[in-house]
Length: 292
Length: 133
Image (cartoon, rainbow over all chains, first blue to last red; front, side):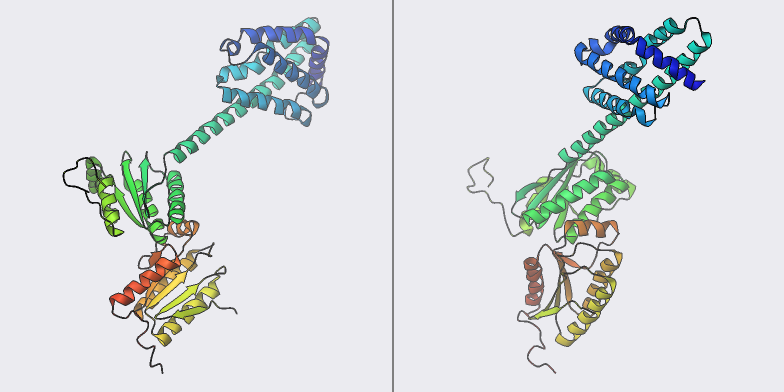
């Protein structure tokens, strides 16, 4: 029965290629993907033609099982198309419709070929539905995977962007933290800080948490880990930028940092300079605005 | 079995770990170091681990126990030159080596040990240097 359906479908695809492609182009043109201007009609037609050819090839040796080896080129091609659409910002509907819009032209062709034979028509429709549904699902899978990838990459970029280590003075580093600290970010922060300590031969690292929205027990634990790792490397840490509300929350939650902490980065920097045996003095008492 | 050499420089014992530490080596080191502290009356121990790439909880614990033993014998331990990856591993293992002083490199570590010796009016090495039994 199913082989029968595959044969019917194969015949329709081979003999009616021009008509099916023509109808598919029309339905693709009516779809929203073209109107959004993200892809040109010529490109869309080239993709459609390639997919159609590969579908026919796959069908002729692999039956209606779209997971068979004979469908590998088609699956790879669809995956590429789907991936590029995910990156270009197509909607899921647009992406899935690329395959699903092929259904109608094929059903039409099947009807033209086997109008007289109801059972052959039904078998052909079933075969076409099976193959195209599987391919449609595959497109969606790849689409989603690519979106996840994009999101993951963005997350990583944000993490990297938001954890710079700045050199304030010889041997004094500052690490202004922005955003919530989770374990993944703590890892990045720690690595960056420790590497910077090695590179700059730093004695003191100031961790500024002005940009950290909340400090709960977990965040505190992550902070302490970073401090402990820096200490193992031989650098002292000062935590600064603890806002009034955060200080209260921390006390209420019973979070203890057990490290030297200062209210502002300036205070921490002054302490760091003092510890490294330096002092900031005003050059002339009368000159204002000059601090060094 | 090979052992890690311990060098004496004034009142300080210097150990540089250049090979991958395995457990028996670590145990032997603790033993040798303890004996050496007692024999020389050293006041400072500098352990240089910049070549150490892999640590496990055992090695971490060994460092802590070496430091504890040294402290009992009135010698201070400074660990110098820990790699970032090693530091992260130790912290993740929950071994924060409290009680051990750390330094970024040998130079600073040595300065730390010397500072302590000078503080105690003992800058020129071990008190027992001159009249060893």
